[in-house]
Length: 487
Image 1 (cartoon, rainbow, N blue to C red):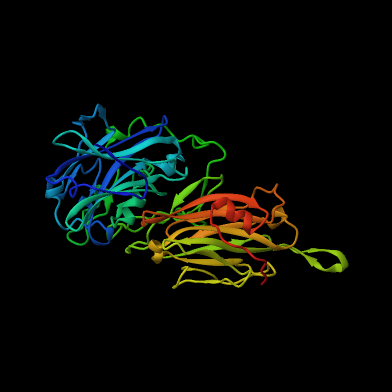
Image 2 (image 1 turned 30 degrees about the vertical axis):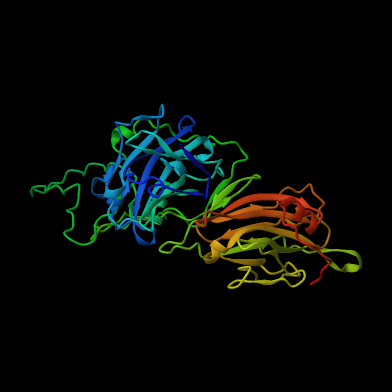
């Protein structure tokens, strides 16, 4: 009998099925034409980190953990009448005790380069099959992604009190397989661009014999191992279609915005070029450049990533900024929009409330509700806008948060306010603009932050307008009692 679970849920494997050892983890999906999907598994130790390159199971390294984990590249079997796109065979008893988790992921090959994302992939599922009987024991079907991810950690096997369990994760990230490797502690060697073929040297009258320079420098002896090369074998990379100019997505898809200064520096100089000195050590891999991710349509989602080297998301900063231009009103007085930042919060213990300057409910970062407003910009002249902080280390205590902005003073003119919320922490900045300007209502629900399986926060774009706090409360089912307040 199959146990069907949803994102954030967990399922027992060995505790409810004594004697279970050999399992098959199968994954399937339906991709759009030209979208090239790779499967990989990470063998993780303490701190959810890999200890060696061999802990990444992928097309370039199909077996690990002393043979206990093996990618079934050519001999995939049909179970319950279905042959999965990818399968990995695992002997649970054979996995060394040093490994605490096995994370299963899907990535888009050259996703950023081709301007592709998981919006073009549907029907992603992961199932666990008992290899002895061929029966399916657990199935997790991933719901719709936000449309910006190029990598997804679909689920994890993990040990708990000596038993194996499965967690449905479903967290999406940008940066593809390289970014996942970096987050799990594996150094990746970037693929260099092919160098132009140099022109042959002009003949010289010298009678000295010509000694050609080796095309490859000698490999250094000892020292740190070289970073992992994720380059595909030539027979796999051939025939890949080039990226289309529009990325194959419609115009309303979320945008990925490169950070200023990302990419390689370049320049020109006068005179004869000077040859670069020969490298004296193994070049270090280029770190994946940070990006801003803009959620552009209602319902777009993306997950925050835990900080490298920790088991926590860390502090999350929610920044509200808006147009600071001041106009002249009647009697020469300045007129403008005073935009305030706030949120509704709900904790796991049932505690509900609000954090906002109105009523001086500024919250607390280290005590409940683990959300704190830094202050209130009454003029709109502070270049930093308003900030609200969320204690990501208390993820397990927080159930959900609705971030909102409301116009405390001035006409409900959202076009004039030109407000934008930026969420920082756990990866690239996430940008949500209040750019649906038709409403004359004074409150805007900007984003929903939801606890997903005590593993990560999911950020969802809302941008929905309301006449006030009570109407917003009713729309999202908070059930608070509201009275008139002031700053």
